[in-house]
Length: 67
Image (cartoon, rainbow, N blue to C red; front, side):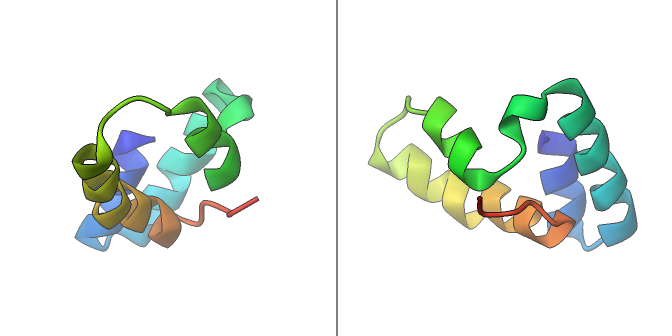
């Protein structure tokens, strides 16, 4: 997932989508933002804000669904 996020942030959307598809194959239980955020409950407010402005942006560009 982090590879998909990084590629999405970089703008390499085709590779980001491929990496996200592979991440879903490996961890099908994290197939949406809702399910991922239910799992990732650690970290303080600053950590979650940084994730929202980087990792989540990249995953959104890669095609990660909300639900």
